[in-house]
Structures are given as C-alpha cells and as structure tokens.
Length: 82
Image 1 (cartoon, rainbow, N blue to C red):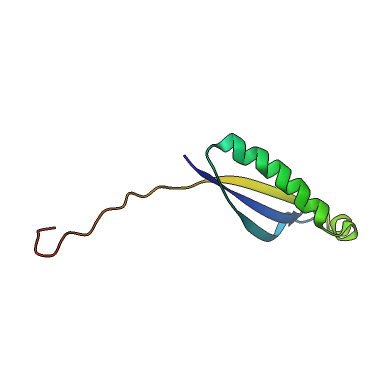
Image 2 (cartoon, rainbow, N blue to C red):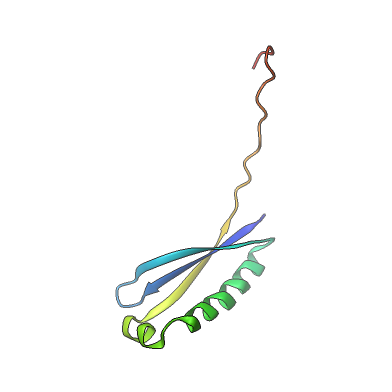
C-alpha cells in the first residue's frame, strides 16, 4: 500500500487550518510516511517567521493518506458484447 503525506498549517488558538500541502512524494509504508511527516513538519515550522508562529500559535499537523488503487477496467472492443 502506498501513502502520500499531507501537511496542515493551523493555529492552536482556534484550531483553524490556514492551508494544506500535499508533499510530492509517495511512501511504501505508513512508518516511512510518518517519519517523513515529523521531519518535514519541523522543517516547515522552522521556515516560518518566529513572530508569526508565536502570535498565532501556529503548528503543523500531518496525515499519511492511503492511495487507493482502483482497478483499470479496459473498455470493450468495438463489436463485442460488454
């Protein structure tokens, strides 16, 4: 099962989400996604203006979302019953 990492910037004052970001990476398992989530979340928070982080009590939440694999069903060939 593959996973993608989604980061959410939110304020702890109101628990309101400012923005979400899909990290352009796929992970082979939940563990590797979660470890990357902690790492990338911390680095993302470090890049923000410290005054803004403190004033709005910003934090980064993340989630590892399973990628659903929908089976590809080919269309019937012309002239064949479906």
